[in-house]
Image (cartoon, rainbow, N blue to C red):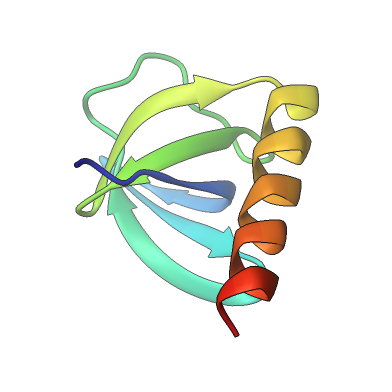
Length: 73
């Protein structure tokens, strides 16, 4: 099973970006995607941005993550 987590791009440094995952910031490689900008939402899998998300899709995915996390705690 593959797991990709949505996050918001806060800063871009060449082929890397600082991505926010609900307050947790991590660096991810964005070289697989074209035209990533600060403010975009991306799916991150093992440190790589694999897909851009529109804001509505990102919000819905984040809601599902919150729901799943609440069920498991």
